[in-house]
Length: 78
Image: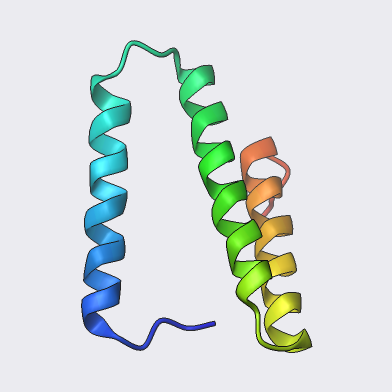
């Protein structure tokens, strides 16, 4: 599920920057920020899984979900 459209990529980057700006300026603790980001990523992955067109794309989304979970939990090793 690669993003081919450069305008779409730019919009994704701008959206990420807006999210980071909100996190920098909110009154939440780091733990609450992580919980919020986790919720956002889960919603995005759920949407990607729903929109997957075939089994290969679904597998890619599930692999991404697992990797992100490992990174959040600090269990991912390089």
